Length: 194
Image (tube, rainbow, N blue to C red; front, top):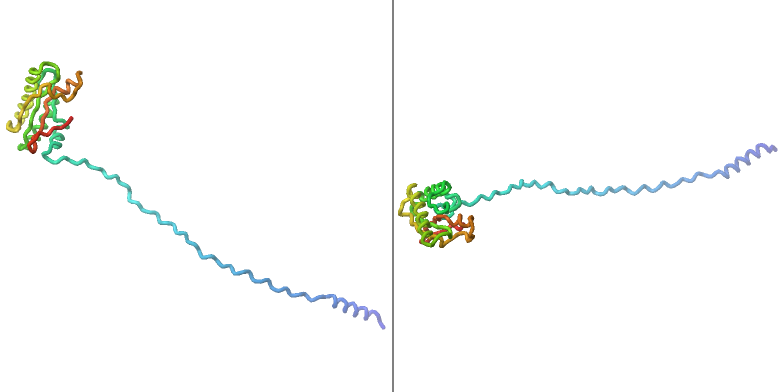
């Protein structure tokens, strides 16, 4: 017997016994399905279109025609005219104010006025009453010369009795040397406090 073929057969048999069949690996489980989260759309508020901020201009309210405020505005903001020391002649500033007053008074011929003459505290009571009367007369005459009816005007003097400035110095005295125009409306004289 031949050993050679037997050895070969035995070897083949041994080898075949040792050989193992490859085990089939089970397929890996499929990955879990990728579920996409629903798209989140972030709501961004649309830009708010604002109207441009425009500051409203507050227009000054004009006084009603024929009122004391209208008279004051037309007269340049003051109802008084001022005089130099111991004088009753009108200054250029006084003339400008009185022209404005006369223009207004001609437009409102139904309005009567009171022209008050005043003086500073220096001098006697009698002297200052006379000086105040001359100042009131000077203003009245000028208004009449500008076309204001004399029947619209009443003049009187307070002398030094009604000062508008209590100071006993040149500034106080200068303010007290004046003539003041008051309007007669609804039975009373209206005065601008200045």
